[in-house]
Length: 255
Image (tube, rainbow, N blue to C red; front, side, top):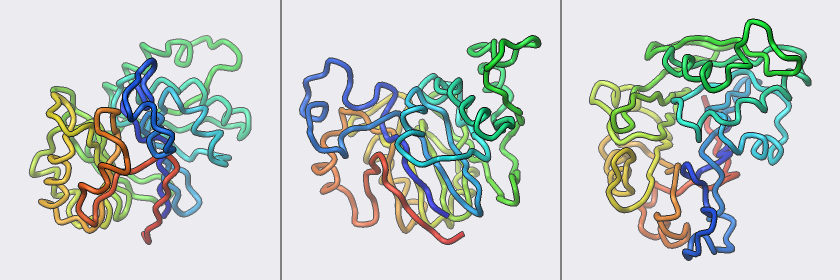
C-alpha cells in the first residue's frame, strides 16, 4: 500500500495570496502546500480522498491514469471544488467515476454541481456513479475501508482507515468510540492547522497528544496553514515518530 500526499495545505493553500509572511515567502518547496488530499494505491486500485480546488494540478503532478473511487470527507469547498475535472477520467477510461460520500455531502454536491446531476445533461459533463456511505465498513474491489466519525467544530466529517493507515482531516474532536477504530494503526495522518488554538481544527500540540494517547508508532500531520511556521522549524519541535507531511511525500506500508 502506498499513500501519496497530493496536498497538505489548509483551505487557502500556502503561500496565501498576497501574504508577505516568512512562510509564504519561503523558497523551501516543503512550504508550498496545495489543498489537502491523498491518493492511496493498493492491489491495483487508486483511491482518492477529496477533490480539492487544486485537483487538476495534483493529477498532473503525478502519473495518475485511473481512479478506482473518490471518497469525500465532507462538503467544504476546499475538499470538493475540483470535482468537475474528474471528467478527464471519463474521457480516458470510457466509464463513470465512482464517488462515495454521506447523504448530506451528496445532497450538497448536487446543489453545488447541478449540471452534473441534471436529468438532461449537457454533453461532456462529469459522469459519476454515486454511493451513499455511513460509519459502517464497506469494501471496494476487495479493499475494506473503515469510516471514522470526527467533528469539525459542529460539522460531522469522516476519516477513513485503509488497513493499517488511518486518515483524519478537518477535525478537532474524535469520540472515544471512534478512537477505537484508529487504535492499532501503524500510521496516523491527522490535521494540525497551527500552533495556536482554533475553533474547528486540532492544534499542533493537540494532534501530538492524540497520537501519543492512541500509541500510534508513526504519524504525519496535514492540513497545515502558513501560521504553523516553516517546515524545517516545526519539524524540530516534534517527537521522533511524528512529522509534518509535505506535498509529494510518499509513504509505503504493508497491508
